[in-house]
Length: 158
Image 1 (cartoon, helix red, strand yellow):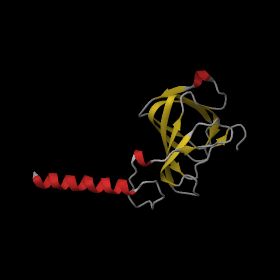
Image 2: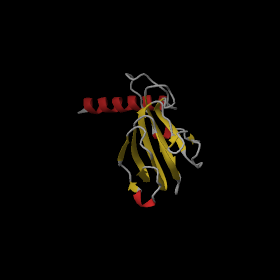
Image 3: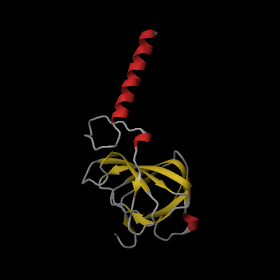
Image 4: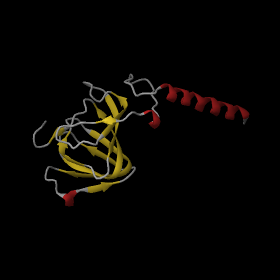
């Protein structure tokens, strides 16, 4: 029993050391483990033409603006935030971490079409499929996909 306890303590101490060593997310090779603590994430304003200010973005893994490669980012949407119809040229995977994420597909901005997704919900968006929505209460989501991460307004393509 002592050997198992000693092994587990050493194992978790090692993970803790690796996690603390990575103070900021960085691009790493796909065949290398990486650990990122939520407390190590740095959120910065995400400014998107045609979107209201208030979005905050943190890179968890990879380089979302790179030419290729996988990425993971987190977004915080302030309470009551709404975003216009837009699309992404690459598929996007979204998991709601906290709050209530609001989403509808298309470009009509019909309030009756919006659906609510709470913590734990997973959404998949195929490439070039317009969607719009927002947040009820401060909401945090995690996105992952293949770079480059781009947001294009549905009505203008910019």
